[in-house]
Image (cartoon, rainbow, N blue to C red; front, side):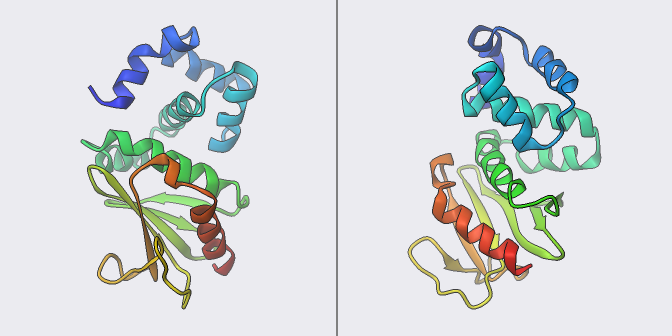
Length: 180
């Protein structure tokens, strides 16, 4: 059983309600943005970030009921534990401004403003690659030149744990967003 499946199975014991019931709570809240949903669950209902992120993703997936949801499910099939990392990245990026567009494609999710500034791709079962358009920014320990990873971005950061969605990565994302 994956971490996500375990969390869903334990949700009622941990939070007092089932996933379906929590989706109903979010529906009644009137909130739509991922970051707003997480904040609501954490501040109003005492959720940990992991459970809040899981419920917010499921709520938005159900609400959208679109091909985007299917694209994400396909991308993360067999890689479900990486959805927590993906959720943390999307939460951070959505906080940059109302002009952020999260656009799932077949193999990655495009992060757009007036143009693409980054992408999130589950590259292996244990790693997400974050592509960034940072122009001539100097590579370092974590920030690599894109190379053959993806020609639509200039740099890449490899992320294997949600803890790596840290201030440094978020600052690179913000820099790319501001350049777009």
